[in-house]
Image (cartoon, rainbow, N blue to C red; front, side, top):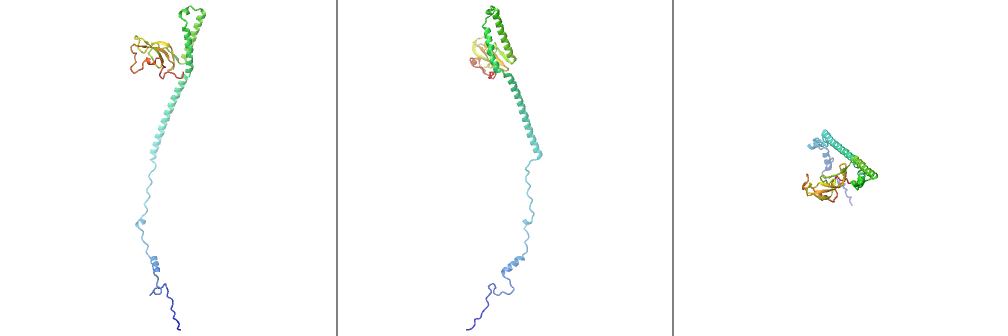
Length: 246
């Protein structure tokens, strides 16, 4: 049995017709890549970066800002001065009113005392007084002196007597109790005083109870738009002059 001739195994990596020292395709590509000329930079990359736009000016001109702040402070100062002045005037007015009208209730209560003394004096007729003995005459004189002193004390503190006989009816200080038909007297004129009134300062402490003429010519200043005294008869006095504290 003849020996089989052994042939060397073929090199799987070698190619047909390859020569010693020849390089493979992969090695050729690597060498070519290593010997490539570097590419020139693009115009976009070569150009320098443009500077970023400056931020918008957030704050206004310092001078204008100071002017605006100055105007604002000046306006605030003027308002503060005006408020302070109004407060001062209001405090002075309240102080004056408090000192003038503080005794309103007390003075109103004293009016009844004066009324009673006047009623006591009016009950004594002139004939009875002329025929009275010394004791009764002294008593009457004492009551009159007390009434005068009371009136003087009230007047000292700003309480004035209101006796509107013959005057034009004023609803702020008079209270119409009834009407008296009298064509000879101007309509709206006070022709009878039932009870005198009193005022303290510019306020009515107690309205005078009066009778008002009706039927005569209208008094000066009475127009069709003004209310007649008949609407006030038997009603409370109206107007801001009446002192509500009394």
